[in-house]
Length: 89
Image (cartoon, rainbow, N blue to C red; front, side, top):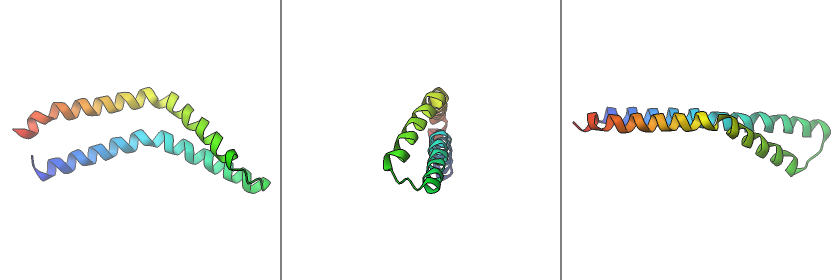
């Protein structure tokens, strides 16, 4: 196994991690921005007002994209395991 192979595997792993985390992080970002804008306009500074909608939004994002996330992770793992014999030989 060469250093190029290790770097390629690390790059693929980071890209898969980025793809898998994007729906959750973007949902939390959009909801957090909207709630912060609402709080600054109304001057309501309640902590639970920011936490609860993010929690619900992330839960909905997981329900919607969870199947795709699981398939992406399983496909990546299968591809990685199938490529191991070629890396060693």
